[in-house]
Amino acid sequence: MSIQVSQVKGDVVELIFNPRKEDLRVGETLRIQERDSGEGLVVQVVAFRMVTYPSLIQEQLELVIGNAPPLSRELLTYLSEAQETLQEYDTSEARNLKIAIAKIRKLTGRRWDQWDGWIPIRDVEVTRVSDQELFENCIDDLGNPLHLGQTLRGEPFFIEGHYLEKVNVITGVKGAGKSYLSKVVLLELINAGAPCVVFDLNKEYIHLPKQDLDPHTGEVRAKGIVHLKAGENLKLGVRQFGLSPLVTMLTRFGLPDVSAMYFENRMARLLQEAWHMERQGRTPPFIGIQHLIDMAEELEFSQNEGVSAAIRSRPLQAEYDKVRNGGALVIDISSLTNLSRQGFVQAIIDIIREICERELQRGTGCFPFVFFEEAHLYISHNTIGYIVTRSRHLGITCFFVTNMIGGLDETVLRQVDNLFLLYLPFDDDVRHISKSAMVDQETMGAFVKRLRRHHALILGDVTRQYPVIVKIKELKGIHTAGETQYFFKPKRRRTPQDHTTVPELVIPQVLQYNVPEMEHNGVPPDQPSLPLSAPSQPTPEEQLLLARLQARWPDIVTGLREKSAFLGSVLIASNPVKLQDQVLSITFTAGDAFHRDMLEEPEYRALVEKELSTVLQQPVTIVCQMMA
Ligand SMILES: Nc1ncnc2c1ncn2[C@@H]1O[C@H](COP(=O)(O)OP(=O)(O)OP(=O)(O)O)[C@@H](O)[C@H]1O
Ligand SMILES: [Mg+2]
Figure 1 (tube, rainbow, N blue to C red):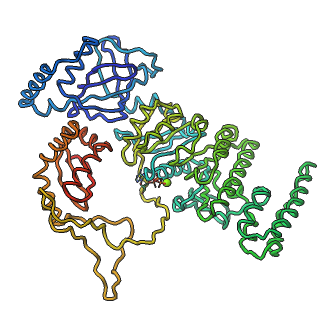
Figure 2: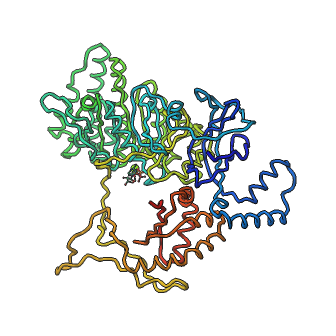
Figure 3: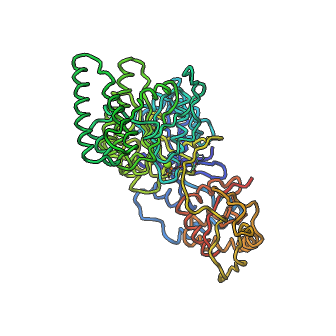
């Protein structure tokens, strides 16, 4: 393997490599091993940088001569001229050297060991750590594998269910794939026979495969979800709910004050009776609730049908029993008002606590896995704190799915067992999430800011605290979308802004999009539904524009090189091949995967898109591909 150690500073190793020969990625794990002693280090790539011959030689010389002043300008000029001569012989090799910055993680050995500061001093060899070795050292298998996706090198990636218990956080920016990952985990849990509860705020989970239950025997024919709709087929009993929250909620639903007082008095007496009976060791008859239901049915409290309906209860415990051997109660809380949602979820959490206690008492151990989707919108800091601190005792496992990372207290973050992080470009978020102290902030930032679409950084008990980047699997054939309602239905494809002529590059006539032909009555025949399907071929105007862009490509690259020398060198290997719907596809040859990766870095991508948008006088998104 042609990777050389350039230097070691603290826990950072700099490695020089040729990206044409080695396709290194951020997150990749390498071994640096002394040839003679066999001792070595496990390091993980966190970033890359460009290296030119002169700068490399200067760095190396400085290393040798310590703090001596930098090399003179004349010498550097000489070296760069020498490099140019060299390039005439072998352009690609000379410009292609890169430096990978890697963090030292472990000492190698039969089992990886905690790094104690040792660094290799003799001749070393740098090799890749196989996924197999990574799994053996970081991923346990106690017989409960949950399949989440694949590693950077395409190996199937599993986590051990046991280590998923108790506190998990799934976070990332809006649209990064948090809910999708939650669904992947949920479906794996269901499959593995775990009982789950999901608080579904956006009707995102209700279309997952449904449980198929034999109505006569109650036998589960197919595992899946049970859709419970708050206020419809899921209503809470008064005792479960707690009298005070119930009265508040009922008043909000329209129960007149006088009725509320009357209701509260009567209920308080009934609950008191039930409580006394319990204290005497007697089982309180269900009459208390039944009474209430009868009263509600007779519309004693109010003429309001909604209020009466809210009082009728259907025990959640019974629903839970349906999913005890694998399944999910998806509690659809979308139709509740913000106020009632908080009370409702709070009450359900209380029932879940009772369910856990029942499981504990019976020794059956079917503890729930609870997903709080968009947790910040309906559970308070206190409740999150309560769940987190009590979860170990109760047996409950929770997943907080949120993009409001700031809403998670530091105390909570410190108790998190596993973090599932999706793309997270903001420093503030990275700083906050680093308080979990799972890994240093530098690594966290380096990884989560560069995560590609559908990739997640997983770390915690499931990876023995080793940061692992995983491509989350696709849920083929499963409806995962939520129910977003739109007023404006798309009637045609995106229309570009009006463009006339640009200085150097002549833009063909405004790129016309096919507007669906109107029927005689003025109604478009077929309203396309989201997502829009892309047209199969670029228009002639787009093809013409592409040809002109290709002709000017070397100049554009030179222009960009002035803004960033590194970006310029990345783009030398690129070739614009297709322009369609304001999306420009840029290809790289097979040996230039590194360049493609670099161009996908947000800051470089933004620079290129900005420049191209100016040149083409229209917003352009770039897509980087490898040439087949
Ligand atoms: N692993 C994946 N494979 C295929 N599609 C995915 C994957 N992950 C996410 N997606 C798609 O990306 C889009 C955004 O995902 P998702 O809704 O899960 O994001 P989110 O982070 O929950 O967003 P929000 O903050 O709006 O809730 C969805 O259309 C989803 O289908
Ligand atoms: Mg979501």
